[in-house]
Length: 175
Image (cartoon, rainbow, N blue to C red; front, top):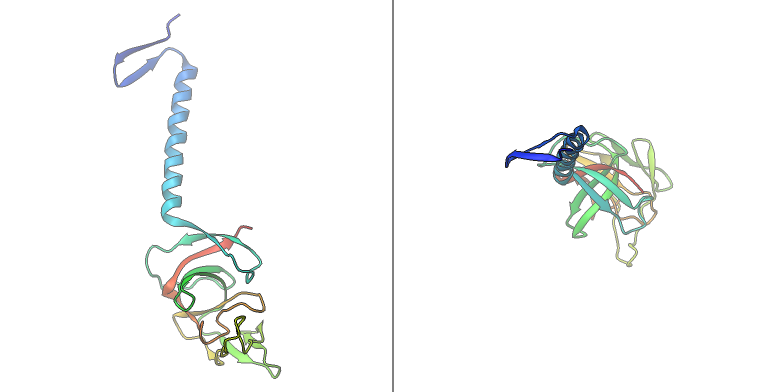
């Protein structure tokens, strides 16, 4: 019985086809794993929200490699850095450029036929907050929203509309 012979120190030769198959599979799996890891490390980001403003807590985002002017789809989740809260924020896109912002007679804010609720006059900490003005969402901006009643989002002037080029990722909820 012949095990393996090494005629060249850099080439493994073997008389057993099953060992050769195993080595080929191992090489293939290792190569694929490296490619998937490299792709995930450069193009995918996970996001976790610690506030109750969104119904989901864990998100997966496709990273934008450079500031982009491409508009994310309506009802997509976006990740962006917001200076007023000094952190990364995850919100739901409810209004795209050209959408109409209007208030009804009860003070409810509507974004292109979707009611996003009545903005509060005080924040959770008791600070006065001002509602966003009615109008048209300008080119280059989106209306970012979270369904929680007390969410700090584009319903308020201090938060405002979000510049599209500040969006760092577009994603989906996992859990």
